[in-house]
Image (tube, rainbow, N blue to C red; front, side, top):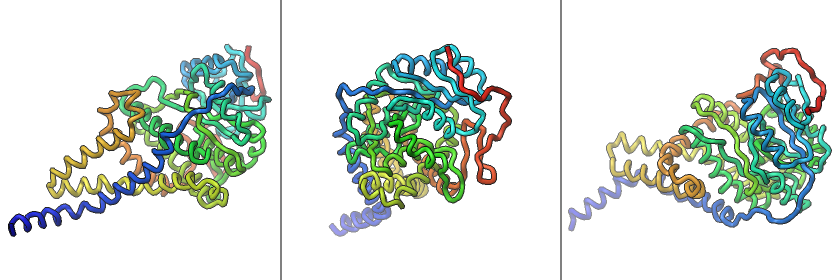
Length: 413
């Protein structure tokens, strides 16, 4: 009996070192359930409300085939007008645009923000959809995104987004990340306060009068004295919420965009996104308006904290491997697979084969945590992945010389 007791005591002390990880796991699962329960109650708006809608698209060196397919998908939605603000250097997309009944604005001003502003100022409809040039719409997007605007308090509406024709590991992982976002974070924020933290720039719809109202604040955003170039979707969403309007996710409105397939581009893109998130969320959490949205504040803080706590799990795994505790190693690895699969269930229902990608998804989550910490440490840096634009002496400038071309407004056939 004494030997059994001694053995049990030894086992208890041996595994006691892993207790902090267990406690942290309980806390993290509790935080997830706080989001998951309201997210499960999400329902898209269903009514016959329809408002005139224009589409504004900043275009810069887009893949011609994807761009043409995207334009055709927007036209299939029978919108009032499509305004393409095309960079002067992008002659291929200018040629493609000339085939369609769209308005073309050719600009030599660097940066996406000025292109967006020029676009919504050129529109005349009550609603304006800000869309990326590689984003392909389903046939009913225009009708679906109009429905939440039946509530006059709603100022902006987002869509459900996925990767267009995903191939390879990284694109499949991006698709998993997107489903996790739209069935978890955004769904919960929609239910709890009608305050989605970011209406993704791939497709976000706003009341035009509000865009005109916030235009100056949007264009003049700075962070720690440096002009902000990217993060336009987070900034627009925040400005709408700051003024007391609601933001909503209409998950029945489906769009698809392209995503990088190489690790280098994937990490650079995620680094830029993470910097934008840190800047926007830290500023929001320091402002009085966030008190009107306690659940939104919780999700922002939770996302920031998770960037650090997530890395404790691989740290304990490494310790267990060095310790030679293979039982714990196998249990923790199995738990990662099972627990993440549970959280990814909406995606796995749509793509069952992704179950075998879950271990890779978990590893990429750890990599993303490191990227987010690096983003926080370099938060003042402003840089685009796809645009030759940078901040020099506090001013956004083109980092490569544009070719000669028109800068006036033209109307396609």
